[in-house]
Image (tube, rainbow, N blue to C red; front, side, top):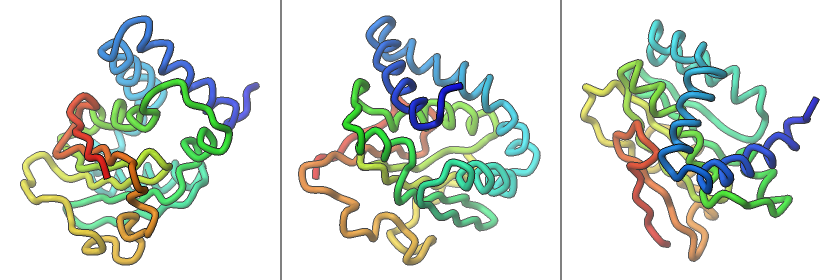
Length: 187
């Protein structure tokens, strides 16, 4: 059996290989089918049935099992995740493993289609350094994402002094469900 840390390196390599073989649409299809519709199919059911409470249930358990450093915030209309130290991206960084140009995209690659099925949209940013934030709300809720510190207080990853490393790009998704809908901002 392969350990979780070895898995991350193989997973990341697989993304690069799939994209080289079939292009970005083929890779996005893999994320949707293999992760969203197969290995994480239970997540969509709990979120469809329970909404924000289902997100808190699913990610409360999953993120605690994966390790890393994160916090979650739930209101009646928004579920927020602040990832301060992603265990899988952190492993890749520490071990200088990079085959795919944006490993972080795989999260939105399966979470986006899953939440679309459940009627939600995502505001999200990642900095390519193992840090990101997510705000998930019902697709009919036109509210913009919170300002730094507004919803998560001091746990907001955007308040970290290393959130915007010099020269790094922030990848941003606004009301998204598709990893192809990002825009990058060079810092």
